[in-house]
Image 1 (tube, rainbow, N blue to C red):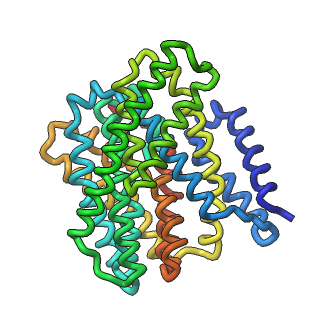
Image 2 (tube, helix red, strand yellow):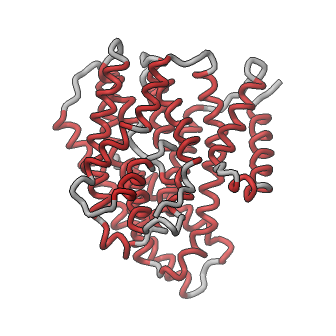
Length: 392
């Protein structure tokens, strides 16, 4: 009989195997998420029907949210703000122009393919797949052969688009539950409120915490062994505090990470963040294995052709066209525009939104859930395989 303990025994063994052979695995262009997702799908296939996996959905959702907050914080803390000072226009265009076009195009494509479904449900699918996840393109972001401005644009965009998508997702979800027409003015109010609260908390609370950390370090009040916990705790605290006050915790976590870059000298950043970043990546690997179990539950009976078509379009046209349009009048070389257009993987934010949708909107069609899950899986595979491109 298989239970939750058995599941995590298997996860631990798979993590150990991945860690022991990670160098060889990466040489085969297989990323950590790809490896864990594949292992999770195989496990689900082998034990489906005989296993009693009971991972509490709500607890798993919170775990994903905290992991995503930590990843956003550490990715932002590694951001080279000196590069962004000269290339800030690119992430701004991606966020303010490409993001709304992506959402609108996703809604249009969904309406054409799923005409029998309520438009609000289709719009929810579109916003679920609008945010991107730089963690799935870590090899791309760390590839020194690709210009820094391109890599930093991808990193900053993925860090902030989660927070921008949250208020839209929540309003659409509320409207779908109550069968109401979305109110544009209400959307703007919610967005301004959530982003405003996030900016205030990140802008005031994190510098205060950083000052305490520097004071403690100056007078040698804390043990170096606890350093990894300190920065993990800061990311989690900023996220939870923002969420509890009605703001966008993901947005706040990323802003706090950017402020970390300002407060702490770059020479000390690697040693302060390496352990925290490694912990975040490990937590993310666990998520991909467990997510595979949810994915298999929904997909094992087969997937409709329209869901497959939508997933392919979501990874290509839905992302590429809006990005190319947003960069149309920039001086960015065409190859770099293509790189920015392609590297928009759907990851943990899309997983969080999907889980919330499953919990809150019981009337949602499995076609919507299947499309979201399939897009995420294909993104992990294809963006992972292409993350080592060496285009200049």
